[in-house]
Length: 243
Image 1 (spheres, rainbow, N blue to C red):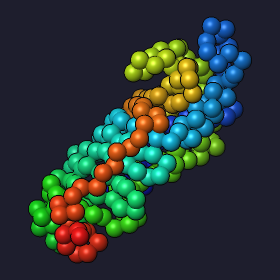
Image 2 (cartoon, helix red, strand yellow):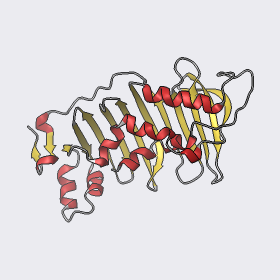
Image 3 (tube, rainbow, N blue to C red):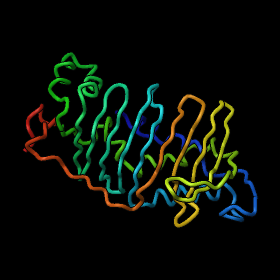
Image 4 (spheres, rainbow, N blue to C red):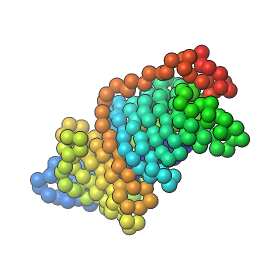
């Protein structure tokens, strides 16, 4: 899986932008005296600086629905699961090593360009596999700082946001920051109004990449425990059991 796919998990957030935004100046809202762009900027910074977080939701990626649920931290410790029409997989990353346990459909898709793809999928399906360092199919989802860097990367998308209503996300109060795009997309970023202004949810409707991602468990340790060595196939050594 490419890093582009990983970034697509939060592409709605990148599209929100953090500068040059308009503001609803209602006096009963939180963040009084701050424009929508200022609130969004604080949210991006707080989320980027968090030591860890959980990212869960469903988006459209490369034309098919992708469901993800990952705990990641700034040290690239990572534990989670991804599922799409072309298969599902559990992923653990700790230290410099990534372990993947995908079903047969997942491995068949990963090896679709290989003449032995079906045989490989049968052999690997349901088993933990140690993948090569830097394998972009899986490690992108475990790069917290990498995908958060895309939050404010697109300068052309940094106009037109407005403050919306105050609501709740998983029991936490949040203010909605909204943006409508000419392509029919509506993007809403929900920012915590109490404590640190973390991003709690991003929702994108309409357009080519609809989806919703919820961010939670800020600052909680990521328990990325490697599977037992005798249960791991070492994909870096032509299929040998890891030692």
